[in-house]
Amino acid sequence: MSTDSFTHVTELDTLRADGREIVSAGGKSVVLFHHEGEVYAVDNRCPHMGFPLSEGTVDEGILTCHWHHARFELACGDTFDIWADDVQTYPTEIRDGEIWLDPDPEPDVPPETYWRNRLVDGMSENLSLVMAKAVINLDDLGEGFTTPLETAVEFGTTYRADGWGRGLTTLGTMANLYGWVDHPEKRRAMYIGTQEVAANCAGEPPRFEQYALDNETLDKERLKQWFRENCEVRDDDGAERTIRTAAAVLPPEAIVEILVAAATDHLYLNGSHTLDFINKACETLDHIGWGRAPEVFGAVVPQLTEARRAEEQQAWRKPIDVAALVFDAHDALSELVAAGDGRNWVRPDDFVDRLLGDDPEAIVDALRTAIKEGASAEQLTDAVADAATRRVAQFATSNEFADWDTVHHTFSYANAAHELACRTDAIESYRPAFDGAMAVYLDRFLNQPATPLPDPEGTDRTPEQLRTALLETFDEQGRVNDAGRVVAEHFDADGDPEELIATLGEGLLREDPQFHTLQNLEGAIRRYDRATTAAGRELALVATARYMAAHYPTRREGEQTFDIARRLHRGESLHEDA
Image (cartoon, rainbow, N blue to C red; front, top):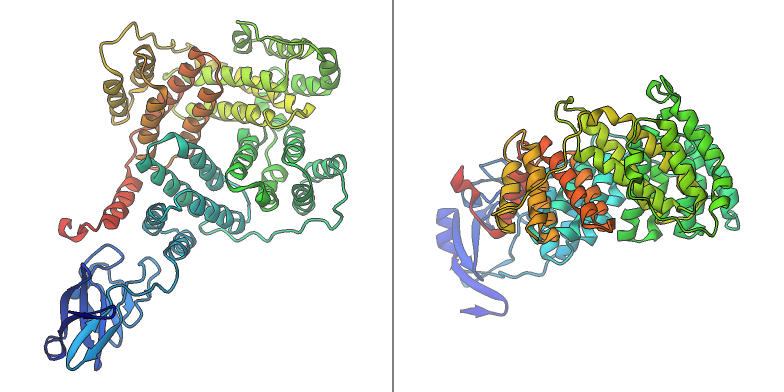
């Protein structure tokens, strides 16, 4: 029996005598409390991890859950502990000694707003479970990609004084991966992205943004000159004001030109990270809109002004001064490009092999000749990225484990160089082809002896069996070559490469976040997508499968947290497993 939206649930005398009572209303389990002469109704599931609040304690208007001691204001359900969500309360009325309640009250704020705010709470306190819950609920509400991404970008560009770093780069990487994986992994991708932004900001002072210059008539060349000069003398404030001005008044391709020029005035900045982070900033803006470019690129500035410069490092100067070779090539670019104007370069079949050679002067000469023959920056950086992919695919496991990161850094730099060259035809976009090629050269000993590319020689396993086998290689340490071979077999068996990529994504996202491994798979997918031959597509996925297998398995703590959030969302009773 009901009147209006209220439903009769019990008698007042019964509740007064017992102090509390569990009732069912609108298909929900609700616990009633008689406290200080008033009747209160709350959802019986603790919003933290689902423990029955009927087994909690009420004292002085505060309800305390007995599992993790989360506390809630009884009348409105607000939590005192930021790691626990608010508990749902229900309006009650006393009618002739009977208790009635409304099982479907209007929310104080729209659910989308509530869960966005909870995502910010989770990021502010670096609370993994809160972030996981928020991502899952936002996805369920149809906000699964845009809201977490925009929220995390705003948070990351505001609350880290050093600006754009590992966290925001991971977020951009996960946004790129989003479209390649199945739906459960999409949620995991957004969770990992927001979690890594929060972790990268934890304990850091906030950023205080600079303002754009007032003069909106400044042209690209003047802004480019100013930005490079400010970066050269490591002036954060001047560089930020300049790039914010450029981002507000210039089109994307002009902004990219300015950033690439500054990022390549010196060599291989921050051991590859600067160029890669700039590229990820651009790709993130592709997702959230370039209207956010001023704050995003303002946050990128410290990657340029505070960067380590490769020409200051011994490996780039001795025993062969490869830095000088690169700078000489940079100085000759105008002449080289002019010589190639109007010519159409086609990459020779052995060009990548030449880039993998052991003579740095011959490598630089090959690049210079290609430009004179009409090669574009996009073509050259693509070839260098293919060479860097080979270094990963043929990495010798006799090397120290840490050297996996050496070949990975070269790969991520070369991949970023190519992606940025696809955005601008500025002459500076040729520069990282030379830097990247020298990094490939410096990595040569990590392919000695080079692990042979896997030859499947036919397989009797189906593509589905091979994808299962690939995940199994990630469950045991050291199955590097097995993982590469399974990928090659999958291509040989005519398996769907996109299903293989989805499987790689599944294997990646169930592990604890590892920055370079997350980068490596996403970069390999980029190389796969850019490849024009079947061999190129296979090489990219063989390389990343080997890299992933070298780093797995992890403890999978993050997967446990995410699984708890998923089970809570389904309404499962976790406390029964405790």
